[in-house]
Length: 251
Image 1 (cartoon, rainbow, N blue to C red):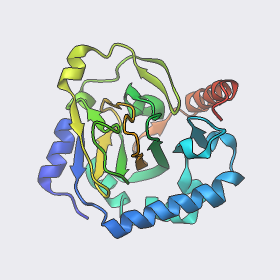
Image 2 (cartoon, helix red, strand yellow):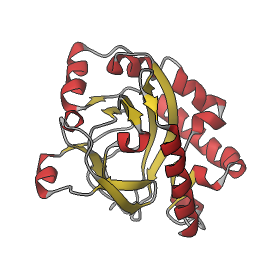
Image 3 (cartoon, one colour):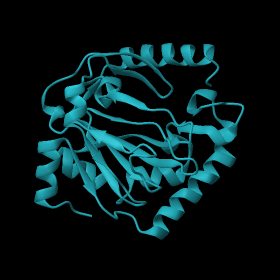
């Protein structure tokens, strides 16, 4: 799919854009079935830090899976094929590096809020040119934790972050204010809708207050080929995170 000039302008101005019905219902169901297969067949073979649970003694509380494209041919093909990568190239206006494909879930009633943050804080890039695609697998609204963006925040630099205590999102913006909350745009989504945001765009999500609805999504991260990673800083951060999560009994 080729984005329109209007969609490119919105992405460049607001730091995010929504492509409605990017996948058909059948394509969404295919993706859901492949996630189920991955959970059943691949996760048991992986290191514990590749999957996070709200309660690791209860498999139904699966919250996040990392680097699926490194562990399975189907998800590698999704990342590098014609479905998503060309969009990243169009929006970043450069060649791209496919970095990570993840699964996100907020289980009913227990899915925790996602703190306000900028993905670029975790990526540690120079320049910080990257994007995240967020593909809805469920109906997503304010009850079960839709994404909430600060329009234009990708243009105002990196905000101060600190430890958040949130599994899977260990850092959050430290000075997020009521004024920030007033400026947020809540993005509702249907299965198959694709939301794309810049690595510097501030966003967050509330917890899942629904009694019987999950909030499942796929996340695809692409870096600009012009960006360089501070590899030593990333490795040190990830090692510290694994140690903290292990000590807390989360992985």
